Image (tube, rainbow, N blue to C red):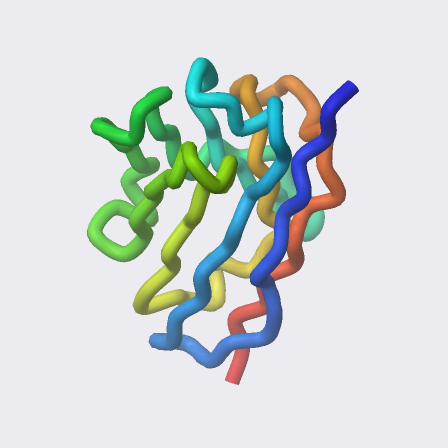
Length: 116
């Protein structure tokens, strides 16, 4: 089973930016919609964003709308989540998946900590 590799997380100050990547040939196939989901400590998995198979349309949960941008480069088999103006409540492990919650993520995720 193909597993995605998420990367780009880290410690960032409130108001800062990060760019997460999701890569895996086959997983990020141009046939698949890709979903970014996150899980904060002690909370359930939460849908963050979706992008369609050719990158023409992206959708966001209200709490990140206007701050996060999802794009994809099918030639590189990579999907990105640009996180701007981050807030402490964005702290979570971020995953990419081809299914929405509650389907469990297949990758290891990348940790994002927003703190001063």
